[in-house]
Length: 322
Image (cartoon, rainbow, N blue to C red):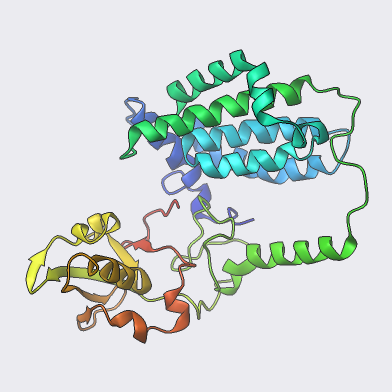
């Protein structure tokens, strides 16, 4: 539902297009323009994310749904976040009783050839080029890909006559509470409460540029102030803001949540006493003011929380893919 916004379907802004383009560029591809096939990627992603849950509700189509979901999350893991895809695959495995209760280590040992093949796939296909600790990124992609291939094979080879869902009635009260909490967390962006941890990643959903087709712009009473960094100082000597945090390396292109900037100063002052930031309101032409070690204590509670993106592009028309 988060992806049902105009920006996600715009090939020049969409994370659904930007991620594979970024992947191809990291792999050395020379692209003069966005390939036509990738321009349709946002539509395919939305169809898959809507269709797979529907197919999971029918015992006759559960196998197709789980196989499709495994392929989808493998692509997500290779393109972007391995850890998120691994959690989603663990959830998918729970639909298969004998897999959810198996000894994973024993399973990997008995399918070691598939494990090795999957690790080679992770090394070759993984998007580990842009990481600072590249060796660790390669190890993560290889481990993820190896485990994925073994589990994928076991799902493919499973007896089709066995039901995928575990039989037995779930406690109604527990299920109702879980469903209510899940829905509240997922709907939080539409009340202006938060966007982080609400399954809104890579959806182009942002409160400062609202283009959703189904929901009106929320009032965003809990959104923090986003500030433009003018300069950083340490003991009255000007320094590069990137020295305070690697996230501030693009300070000339981004706005930052005030809570994050305060946290940067506090962390810096543990080793570099006297660090401060001069900032101004990101969307208004206002007077510059100082963020020091004591500023955090003066913030309202909602600005101390990290429930919104820590940074947004200064240009509102630029995409946000986090």
